[in-house]
Amino acid sequence: MDAHTRPGRSLIERLEEFEQVFQAEDPWSFLTSRYEQARHRLTLDLVPPCGLALEVGCAEGVFTEMLAGHVGRVIAFDFSRTALDRARKRCAHHTNVSFALADLVTVEFPEAFDVVVATEVLGYLEEWRMASLLAKMARWLHPGGLLITNPPMGRSAIGFST
Ligand SMILES: C[S@@+](CC[C@H](N)C(=O)[O-])C[C@H]1O[C@@H](n2cnc3c(N)ncnc32)[C@H](O)[C@@H]1O
Image (cartoon, rainbow, N blue to C red; front, side, top):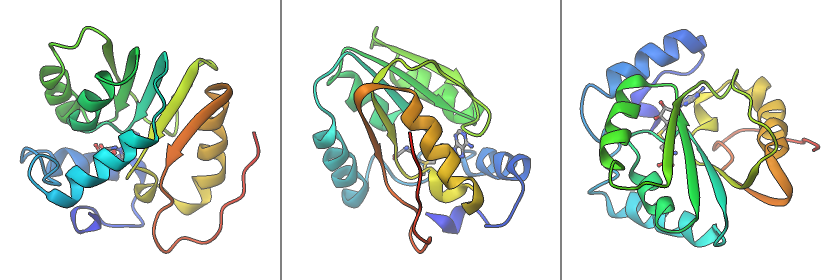
């Protein structure tokens, strides 16, 4: 995955790089890679049936569509306009999905979600932001809600409190 972007860049440079990455459709082969399909299925298995889920960094909406069939309502966001346009088209037939153009670093939500899913996103963000981003996403959950995320490979231990 990191073959697509270079580490150690500022956020705006990263966004421009993601827009480049999304010049090609399905840049991570989510629709065709058996690994990615299995990863999405395993992630979905972790999501309990619930009312409202938030997906962070939804890309072109491949996992969003799976989530839409599994929970009551989904809010999904990404900072790439190109990706989000495709996600909106992919999920147009799902009336329970809404999308937002937003940056994880700056966006805020009220405490409203039963589940927050943020997979394959944190690895693109600076290590020094990890603890505060994890704490922020945890704050978006109802008490007893579930944050599903995967720690970036090779990163040191992260501590955060809610
Ligand atoms: C590898 S894709 C992951 C897609 C999906 N979460 C999954 O697990 O299949 C990474 C996505 O994160 C988005 N992203 C990266 N940094 C972001 C940020 N700071 N705010 C919002 N989205 C971000 C990118 O635009 C890209 O669509």
